[in-house]
Length: 165
Image (tube, rainbow, N blue to C red; front, side, top):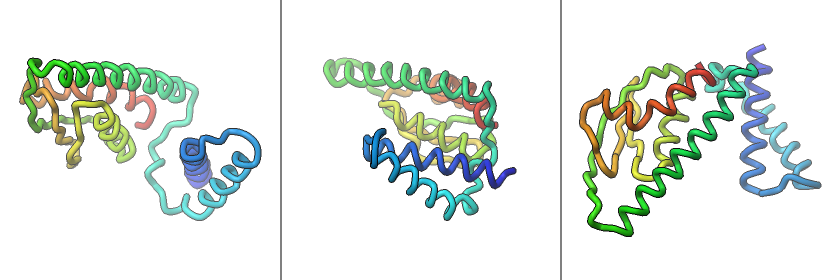
């Protein structure tokens, strides 16, 4: 059963990448993408255990949709904040590196969390070690680990627990 799950998740992941790279969702391009994704999944699903903790339930799929909306909201807020700092140089910039603790155990969950933080402007994940992420923050509000965790990663982490772990 785990092999089938890994194969299906690999196939879906490769197909999503195909669609994003080719912008094709119709005709021959889509059929070629299905074929390439299928062959790629057949060849490589055995080597990928990163999907082991993914839950495939209606609840987790619903939380995935919520995660996408939360991510988009945070992305927009961060873009506006960085744009305002560029337009108005008088706004404070207090760059620094902070440590953020995570309760996520899955490698995939940590990967998604680190990338979500990096993709929101004003933050950049520098390193992940065990349960700790090191983040470069454009405007450090607190060097306290718990406070930085609440401000940077908690909104993502709460939802990720329902999707992956």
